[in-house]
Image (cartoon, rainbow, N blue to C red):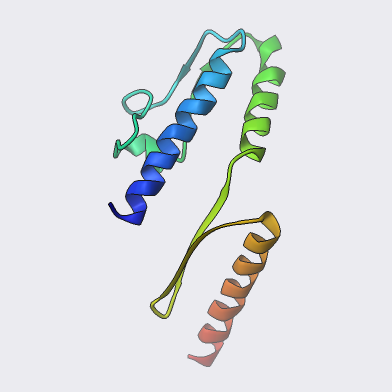
Length: 116
């Protein structure tokens, strides 16, 4: 199993978990475009959309939907996959570590571009 298959499975589970949480609210429906709710192991455009969902509900329920989505998002792990000059780092990191890795990567890319 490749690293991308793990990512697809993780995203499928995460999308299903969020959908389940949203369905516990007083919503009419929660759908995942392009074929419905992805199943673990699925390779679909819905996964590429990183969990895109359509929630049908009354306007007064929208704040609760937003609260559930934000709460769910805060509980998600921060995984990174970086590759620089053939060296690969795949890890779960804190927000601070992720921000530092992104800054270092962007600095490296900027330095490489100016030297070219």
